[in-house]
Amino acid sequence: MISIVTATYNRTKEIENLYNSIKKQTHKDWEWIIVDDYSDIKNYHFVKSITLRDPRVKLLRNFNNRKQEYSRNRAIKIAKGDIITNIDSDDDIPINRLEIINDSFEREKGCDVLYGGWTLVRGDKKTYFSPNPYNPEDFFMANRINNNASAWKRSCNLFYDEDYPYGCGDYSLWMCAIARGLRFMTADINLVFWKNNPGCHSIDKKYEMEHEAIELRKFWSKPKISIIMPTYNRTTYLKEAIKSVMKQTFTNWELLVVDDGSKEKDVEDIKFIIDGFKDARIKYFRKENGGLSSALNYGLDRSNGDYIALLDDDDIWMCYHLKMLYKTIISVNKKLKKEAKPIGAIYGQCAVGEIRADENTIEVHNDGVCRPFVKRRDLIKANYLTTCSVLFDKKIVYRKGLYFDESLNTHMDWDFWIRLSKEVEFLYLGIKSSIYRMHNNNMLAHPNNRIVGVTKISSWEDMGKVQMKHLEF
Image (cartoon, rainbow, N blue to C red; front, side):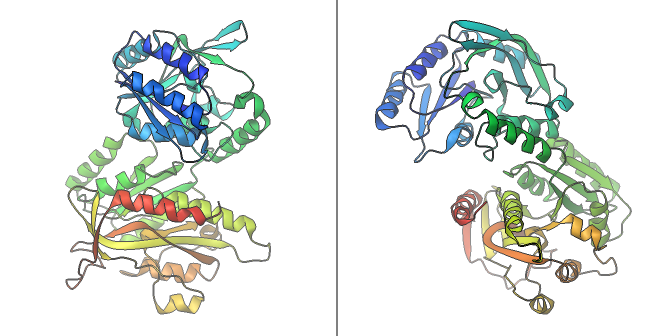
C-alpha cells in the first residue's frame, strides 16, 4: 500500500481536482490521509464529504492552525502504507504516479527514498524539470528535491521538521536522511503537476524561505549533539537504549557507542545490534578496558557536536528529551546579558523504573530523582541529577580541560558536575524525559524499592508535549 499525505487549508475546488487525479491512478492499493489545518466549517465539511464517498480517504482536523509540517506529520504517524508520498492540495498528478513509485521500490529494494521529475504549471504554460542527480554535497548549496515528487519507505521513520514554518521542513527532512546514510534513487519522469500560484510559500514567503535555508544549512553542517553511550560486556538492554535515541524528535545527532574492552562474544553482539539500525549517525568504537570514566573521556575526544548528552546502555529517553533540552538552552542563553554566567548544562526530570517486556510499559519505583539546586554548595552536598538527564556545552568542557576523573570507580558523574558548576550555571526543567532502568547491577536498584505507579511511555510523551507548551523556544 502507498499512503498519500495531504495538508489542506480552505480549499475545495483544488482538493476535488486532486481526488479525481488520485482515484484514476493505475495503482489501486492506496490510502489518502488528509489533514485539515483548521479550515472554516464550510471547507471542512466539503473535504469530509469526500471521505464519505471513498473509504480509502481518511480525514484528520487540527484544532487550530498548525501549518503544513505539523499536519503532514500527523498523517504520517497514522499511515499504514509501506510507502509515504506527499501531494499538496492544489496540485495534480499523472495517472501513473503511484504505479511508478511502487515499481521503483519493487525494482530497487535496497533504496529508501525516491524523487522524480516535476512539471511547473503557471497558467497555461507547463515546463518539465528532470530530477537533479543525487550528490549529498549539493544539498549544502540548495534543496535538490521537489517535495511533491518524492516518496520514501515508512520504515525509514522520516518526518518533516516543524521548526521551519516558511517551507523548509522538507529540506531538513532530506538533510536528516542524508545524515542517516539512507539510499536515494531518481526517476526521470513526471510525478506531479506543481502549481506555483500566489498563496504558495515559494512566492509569498520567498525571502523568509531563503533565510530559513541558510540557517538550515548551518544547522546541518555538523552534528549538534554528540551522544556518548559506554558499554561493557552487556547487550541485554543496548538495543532498547539505541531505539530511544532513534525515536528522538531532534534528529541532528551522532551516537558514539564506546565499547570499553568487552569480550569477543559480546563485541559480535554489539556490532550486530548497531548494524541492524543501518544508520550512519551511529558510530562504534572499541578500546582497552579502562573503566566508565575512561570510556566517557574516549567519547568526548571523538565527539563532533556542540553539546554532549550521556546515555548508559541500559537507560532510555522519551522522544522529546533532546529537543526539549537543546532548544531551551539555546533560547535561554540568547536572552542572557553579556556579563551573565552562561547556562552550560541543562537537565530534565528522571524516573527510576523497570521496563516491561512490551517495551512500552514502565513500572515506576521513583517518580523523580532529579532536583533543582540554587547554589553550588548544594550540589556538593548531594548529587541532584543523573547522567541520562543532562545536556552540556562541549566547548566549555574543552576550554577548561574538564574530563571525568578516571581514578574514581563510582560517582564520577557527580564529581564532574561539581567541577563543571564552577564554570557555568545549571538549569533544571521539571519535565520527565528520561528513565533510569532498575535492575540488579545498577546503583539505584535497591531491594526495598517499591512500585509507585505504572505508566505507558506513549502517555509520557503526550505529557511532555503538554508541559512543554509554556517554554518559550
